[in-house]
Each structure stands twice: as C-alpha cells, then as structure tokens.
Length: 490
Length: 95
Image 1 (tube, rainbow over the protein chains, first blue to last red):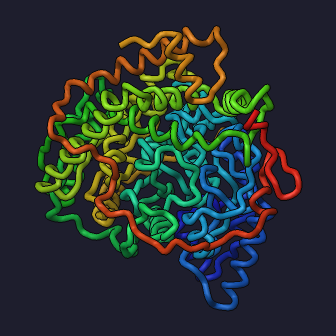
Image 2 (image 1 turned 30 degrees about the horizontal axis):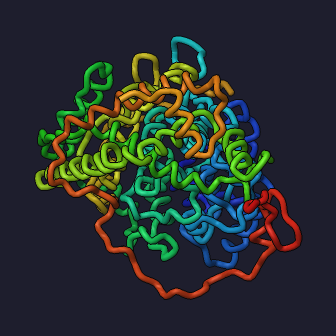
Image 3 (image 1 turned 120 degrees about the vertical axis):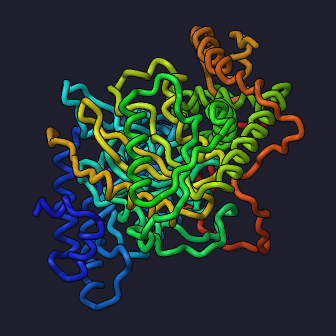
C-alpha cells in the first residue's frame, strides 16, 4: 500500500473518512517508507510501535463515530518539541538522552485532534543553523539531487528533517519551528510549503527554547491547504506561554481557494539584493505576474532597514540563546562531565555537550550582553529591530501582503558553507525580517532552477492575517502548478 | 573593536564553556569576523527610537500565584545525571 504515502494530508483525511483505508494501513505504509529512507537521516527516532498503537486507537474512534480533524493522519515531529516519554534531543548531545515528563502544547493539540506520531525529526542543534549540519546526529540529506551531479545537498535548516521527510513522502506533514527562517528556507530547498505564523499564534510551551522573542512553531506539508489544516490544529491560546495570544483560531483551510482579486501585494525593492541568481529574480517576476493575473494589484514598497535585519538578528538571537541555554549545567538533567569543582563541572559539561556553532552563538551572546557592551550592541539591536518593525507597519498601510523570494539560492552541497559562519547566516536574508517583526511568513514552491532544484517564493502578511497568506499562497500554488517530486534514489 | 584571545578566555569563562588555550586564537578570529559584520548597525540612526523588547504588543498576563502541579519527585528526578533518594547530587558548592 505504499501509494498511500503519496497522498496529500487532505486526500488522506478524506480517504480515512470514507473508509477507503484505515489509519493502521496508511501508518504502516509510512513506517515502511521511513525505514527504507534511513540514508536521508531525516528521522533521529522512529516510533513505529507508538504509531501503530495511535493508529489503532484512531481506527477505533472512526468506528465509534467521534473523530478529530486530523484523526488517523501520520505526522513527523521536529525533535525540538518535547514529547512525553519519547526521547527529545533538540539535535544536541547535551540532552541526547532526555526523556520529557511532559508534552509540548503544539504536539498535545495534534494528538487531541487524532494525529499519529511516526517519530522525531532531525534538526540543527538547538535549531541553530541553515543546513542541518550542526545536528549532533549528522546532517539530513535533501531527497532532491541536482540534474548535473549526485552531490549530497542540504535540505536547509534548521527544520531540515521536517522538510526532507515531507518532500520524500515519509509523513503527511510535519511540525517545524522558525526563529530566523528555519521553516521557510528548508521549504524552499525541498519544494514543500511551510508557514511561520504570527508570533504568539502557537504556544512555545514544551518547545526547546532558542531565542524566545523570535521562536515560533509552524507546519510543513506538500500543499498550502495541508499546512492550513495543520496550523488550525497546532495554534491556539495557551496560558502556559505568557506570550501566547488570546485570540480565536480561524479555520485556515477555508481561506485556501478564496479569490485574491483586489488584494494589494507589495514588492519590496530592498529585497533585490546584489549577487541574486538571475533565476530567482526571474521567478520573483513570474510570481508577480501570477498574482497580477489572479487580480491582485502590485505595489512597489520600501523596507529601508532590510539590510540591517541579519546583523540585528545576530545580536538578539545569540543574546537570548546565551540566556536560555544557561540552563544546561549538567545538574538536574542532561550531560554531566565531572570536573574538579562546581565551575569546572559546568565548563566541562557544556564544552562536551554543545557543538561548535552553539558554543559560538553562546559566546557571541555572552559577549554582547557583557558589562560595557550591552548598550552598544544589545540595546542598539533592539532599536534597529523597532525600525524594521516600523518599516513593515508603514508598508502595510499601503498593501495587504508582500511577495519576495524565500532564499537567495537553491539547495547547496553539504559542506559548502560550513567553514564560513557569515556566509551561512546570509541564507536567512529574506526570512529573518519577519521574525524580528513577529509577522507571519509562508514559502510556496514556485519552480525549478536550471539544475532541476526547487525554488520558493515568500509571502509576508500582517500580524494575525495568516488567512490572506493562505489565499495568496493558494493562488500562487495554483498558478505555479508545481508538481515536481524528487526522483527516488534512497 | 578587536576581540583578542584574552577577551575570548573571559567570555568563555562567563559562558561556562571550557575552551582549550590553543582554540582561543581561532575563536577570536571567528568572533571578530562576525562582530565586524555586525558593526554596520552603527550606520542606523536610532536616536529617540524605543527598543523593541517584545514581538507582540501586549501586556504580560497576570495569573493567581498558586501551585498547579508538583509533588512527584520521581518525575522531577527522572532525567537526573546523579541522584540519592529524592535528591539531586551536585558537586560541593560551599568549601
């Protein structure tokens, strides 16, 4: 029954509803696909027994009549989400054996709605990275290959496992998180759809923290509608997260397919950066034409502080990370390396437990927050962050959404950028502004480059206006008619 | 602005991450590269700009100061690297 893995989430839910197949059948098909795809390194933990158990329970609910909106659908969970009784590592050795005694709110919402967990998905360590190469479990391999060679490509990061698993049909959809682009850039690199909702839309409770004022969970799937279905389940107010917004969650799927006629879509001229590959520029122009054809009005807008977003991010995010990751001291949980005294034990545990990129970011964060530098760096970055948010406020007086490329390149080879931190950071040039401003952003696959690799376009919306993004994303998806899949080699 | 090996040593100590002496020069070079790139923020006029400390415009919600869960030492200790009875065992803190 391996063709069950090729279904969209929507088609699978319809098939489950009309009893064309059972949850056990579609779950078993996915378990086999996951086992056959271990060379991709997308899953760091497979939970087939739990999956079958959950699928059986779903089938029983189906017989008795009361089912949730995701009932019986097998999903993958990024290993940044704590799952009760199931090892949750954040891609780090320092909590490499950690078994949470609690469930993250987002995953609890998915199980409440009947979803089935296939396992935990690989990611950059503590979600710090753009290529999945900082994972303590080794990098994920992109199921896509260039048509000019068989080099192993990155699926992007940090949600590289989620992106690869969705693209390779190893789950119907996946959870992911996005602090600077970690949902949207991997979506672009793998020909999948990903949305980072408005900050506060999804609870951060039970998600291992990286940079708390930027982190936000969201779904990845193979269609815009599928991400809408998943987000409707994942989102919702949670008193356990003090930044969770007390707002109603709309039925996001109802926005997909709605007319976008008359919507004003802004094109920010500052996103036309130097050295942008002409193919990405051309795809952007094509996207503008598609939305125009769908009845949108295209407006050129200016976001003058765009170029300062990444440098500001590389103060704010490491500063918050250095504070958040101070908790990993080897005392109450996690790796402990005994030293000659308490401080020595802390220092040895953290040196052994954190990888190079995480250590680097903790060091940057500690430096910019240290006495004498706080005003010059951290406070300055928070003021620049305000100016970036103000840019968006002004643009959204004139337009309903923005259209930009998602990433400045297609997927690159593993190892290509791992020696140059700043070159790696530049991957997030188009995505990071959205995190700083707390806005929703979505990546939709829009075409292939000359090497046959997928490229995405990004839509940015007003705070809490994911609905417009789902409508516009649906329009782009329809116009692009992106049907390509990676050729199976694994 | 230059970060030298001595600064890296100090920052590593503040961050409680052991760094071998021979790694300090390389780290200083890396951090300098990143911080030099970040320096461009000084071009932005931020006079009179309020620092943005939260991504959402909302007041911190208030809740009653009551115990909501607890009383299960087995759960609390389940991931401890070292325990004795219902206690975490940690290195000696007071000499």
